[in-house]
Length: 397
Image (tube, rainbow, N blue to C red):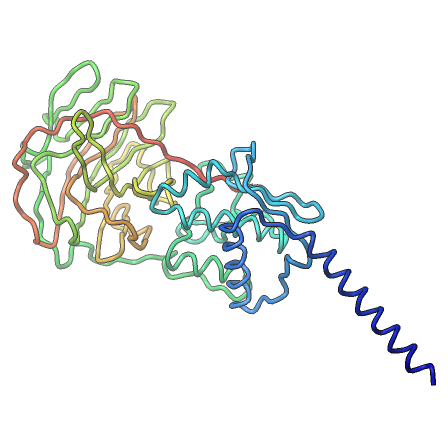
């Protein structure tokens, strides 16, 4: 008769002990900031949406907080008990001032959670166009590459699919971009061929202690003799602020030994009295590596492999096409990068950025647009100006 009572008593004691154990395990969970907790919740939601339901940091333990990583990293994961993740507060705050800040911060947290909760290691393989194959790229980064990952739009979906279901993820279409005729439906508005005819009103020439610019050698040549970087804008040109545009230049670059960067750009300029600020889309070259971005983003948000080295002896055709909500980048008529536009940058300023000690040779320069704007600018004077260009990296530890 007493046996059932004893069994009930033992069962009750076991239940109490189990609850106490759970409470003890949950004390190993600490996320110090509500914003960070939102990203943790989102990570778990994305995992569960892809069939991964085994992640439970509340039970297994997690200690995440803002701090100073002391390693030049946006975040660092420590394999302790519980897993400890430090998100660099200074870098986080810098991101929030840029158009891509939210995606940068989300990538940082997700990357570190993949380390800590899934024990993912760094993986530096690339897709056919030279972008990272996973969102887990990190130290040690191969020479010529940057750790930055484009974690926006359709790329974000791919990287999360790959993270949680790597075996079932196919190579995405944007990693093999095709654009047969980038000028289709557009009207040519600038056609400057320095071996034939060109409009001298588009080009600033002259020489001073900082640069020399000429157009009398069958090409436009800009020699940057200074230790500064120069933006070299074209004059008397405007195109649609919101419409479609295609910009093409046949060029080569002679560089100083210490510099391997050159930028083709188009975008907008703002006159702030003594200074002019530029916000633009750009293609920046580092040997055969191409960095993609715009100045409203914290850093180059993407990278690709170029079929040609722009710093070689041969001329290379470099082009950028804006079509609707997408940007396309071309080297010698080959489309090598496609990306969604999520920043409102028009096409009213065109030109180049020539880094210190480098010489730009332009054989031809052409612009097509959708015809919505065709008039010239009223002001003819747009001299080359010193510009501070910082191509930041987003290192992952």
